[in-house]
Figure 1 (tube, rainbow, N blue to C red):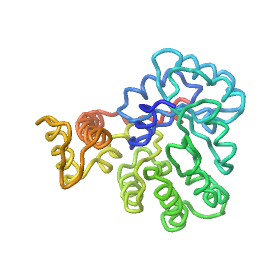
Figure 2: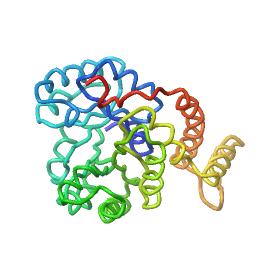
Figure 3: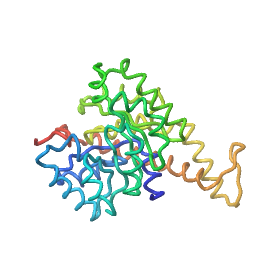
Length: 289
């Protein structure tokens, strides 16, 4: 498993879905400013297009593309093995730790376990403990349908908190919150992001590039984090093999985290500019259908 891929998936805030049968949108998504692109072979692709979507995804990832793939069938797992641009795989409807482990062992890349059912929430601790799982993610809409509830903040509170607790207990970063369907409603997205942050979630599944800038703005590092990162980087720049900052030793992982914080801050500024120029077209998952 690539340490770079694992580090990316565990620090990323924005995960942008793109239908696997729309290869003309792959590069557009990759330049959207999203931290991670997810090529979707599940819900976004009709049954008749599954095979052509798999071919499009493997072809793009065999070239210059890099992405996570949301899989659906065993055939897809076999076809993705050894593909150079595959940085991770999302397992939908994750409930069985043995199945998730088998996917990781077959592909050798980090796994995002997407939890979309009551059984998945109950199994969250077991799923978070599987070697190779980089992140838990919450499929709010499918979960709400599974328990016959409304997909609102109150009804989803226990499930979200369960994923946060399982992630924390097993040393994973905060889980990824589910999609906000109204891709052109920045206010709704902002409310969802703040609600997720308050619970301890640290990333968001997205369906349109215009959602990237708002997500990065809400999830941007705090002033305290930026100040801390600056002190860490400066301490290393000043020299010395062993340094202490704020009474704590600074080693390579600490330095990488500090550098990642400062890099995210710079990326946020660029993404906000792009957002102001974004068109108001349909989502990558829905437009031109």
